Amino acid sequence: MAAASGEQVIAVSETRRLDRQQTQERMMPSIKNLSDQVLLVRLNSGAEVNVAPGGHLDKVADSDVRGNRTIQKLIERGLIALQEVERNK
Image 1: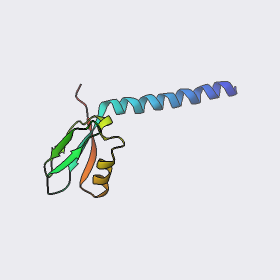
Image 2: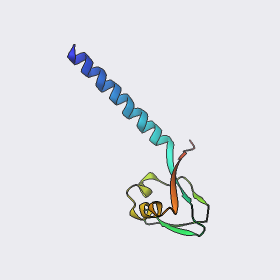
Image 3: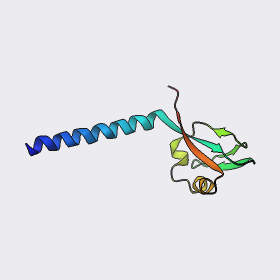
Image 4: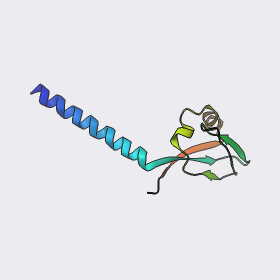
């Protein structure tokens, strides 16, 4: 009986992992400039992008923002916000 319970736990955790993965696949980061000046944002790919005051940089690759220290510093200073936007299929 313990094995059956263990199998159910694995199935539930696997389902949650798949749900989370599917959600992540549907969503992409967007960068919003919260400041009143143009910001130069450097992405992990090496690209540098100007974001107008109050403007958005839509549908940025997750790999361009994940672990990006420059973006993290801009967030901490209240200059930008990361938002999730749905991908178009």
